[in-house]
Every structure is written in structure tokens, then in C-alpha cells.
Image (cartoon, rainbow, N blue to C red; front, side, top):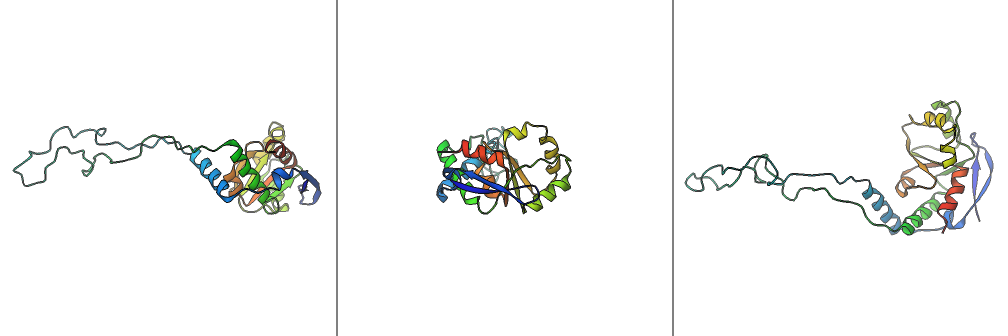
Length: 214
């Protein structure tokens, strides 16, 4: 069993947490992680982009001038693609950008990234509760555990549903370096890679070990 150091809110050691080797001491290929990131980013696209073709723009029903005798090039419509206000050729149309990725492949990518981040950017805290709800108290907590740069918070469901979550959320919602909040059973490969520091509660790490176990 691998172990992760647990810190208190002052940044002092608060014991070790035994975690599953299958989740926090494994590897995933770079190609698989890249594929998972592409699939996540594709799912964020709404696919509602649309450009009108020459058949959909208004006007252009009348031939602008007669076919011969004017000295100008023949034209059949003022809404052809080369005309101003004309339609677009091969423009974007509504589509589904989603990329299929098997659930087990995504989970393996999560395990690989978590294992890579254990010794570098992962910070496990016994409690993230900030009862005062003040931003300066959350900043002091992050500084004490050396969580600098872009920070990703990982919470467990029990903490999110508790009364302590509201003041804690107020204390960090205005921090510009907090890039996202995630639940322990709904992690994103992109967010894990993008964060300079991953701050998680002890309970969240335990839940991750259960959810993403092989």
C-alpha cells in the first residue's frame, strides 16, 4: 500500500494515509492521457455554430444584370459566395463534437495522472473547512501547505453537503488562482494536468481510492 502525507491547516504533518497502489501508484501511457484530454475538451463544445449558405441568406433572387452585352462577368445572384453579404461556402454547421472514450480508459487515465501528481502537486489536508468564510483565512491555509499557482480543489460529497461548506466556498470563490472545484467521484484529466496544486481533503482521497479502484 502506498502512503500519502496528510497535512493540517497550518501545514504541519498530521499523519499518513494509506492508499491503493492501483490508483496512486500506477502508470498510464501518454497517448491514453492525451486521448482522454481530447475527449473531455470535445465534450465541452456546444456544436451550435452555424453559417448560412447561399441558399439560406436573404435576397439574391433576381439576376443582377443580363447575361451578355454589359462587358461585365456573368452573374446569377448577388448572394453567391464571392459577393458581399453572400453565403458561406463549406461554413460550420451544427454538429456533435463528442469523441467516444470507454469508461475504463478514462479511469485508467485518471489513475495515471493521480499517480504522477502524488509526489509533486497533490496536497492532502485533514480539513478544508474555513468557518470564518474570510478569503484571507483561505489564503493563509493555501500558503501554509505551499499551494501556489493554479489550484484545483477536490471535495468529498459529505463535506459539500455539510454546513461547513458554505463559508468555505465563500472564502475561496474570489481567489483568481482557483481554477475549478471537483468532486472526488467526478474528476477531470484536463483539470488534474492543468493545476499547479491539487488540494484535496483526506476523505476525498479515500473516496477516490474506492471509486477509481481497478
